[in-house]
View 1: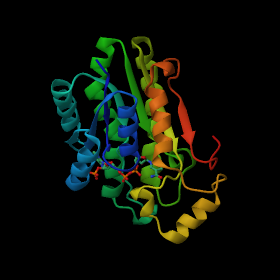
View 2: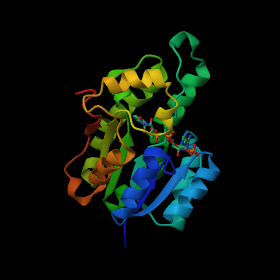
View 3: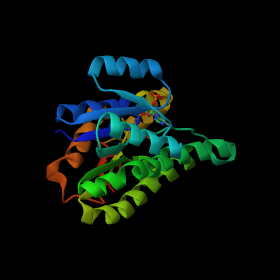
View 4: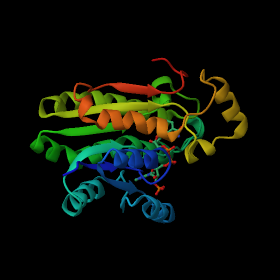
Length: 240
Ligand code: NDP
């Protein structure tokens, strides 16, 4: 029987590329999403991958959602914590809600989903967790104290959980993407984007598939000795 993978925010952008890449590797994949039903419907129609809707920032929804996937599809062996949002503003203009929502979804989502999957992985003696961080969690970014703090937190979360999972065959790693050509980056004003691309040594934005390749490696059987690490995929923009 093939392993079961869940990709949060797996219906669009980087998450969609990850869902498709894991399926191409022979895994049984389930994608989670938050609210864009139309994108999810098209995604399922085009890929055959079922989409489950819940907010990863809602603890109980994650625990219940993981249990539902386990009973309808099979026990979850691979968790990719990819769902994320931005609510950019400089500190003085940032509302508490903008701070809290980003922490709740981007960082809290990793905790909530791990709570839904970790016990089963431990019981079966095998698991892969990949958390999608960000270059901006490593280097910081003007106007993103919420996002940078949450993404930086993901890197600490990864290293701590890796220590808990190691002796049960569970690896926990992070990927820190640079700027990737998805809807999230399309929201950045063009003049700002030009300046960003000028700072990328490779000279272009990354593609979602390039992040997905890293995820499939970390989720593979071959990566059993890789845990607690962060793989930067950023065109050389930040050498950490
Ligand atoms: P997109 O905005 O293109 O897609 C986000 C996905 O996450 C969607 O499927 C969305 O669902 C889902 N999502 C958002 N909020 C929630 C929630 N509360 N619960 C469940 N699902 C949710 O993002 P990207 O593909 O660009 O980014 C994916 C990840 O990569 C994020 O964590 C992001 O921070 C990170 N990243 C992205 C970079 C980039 O340059 N694009 C750079 C570095 C990191 P729905 O469709 O329903 O809204």
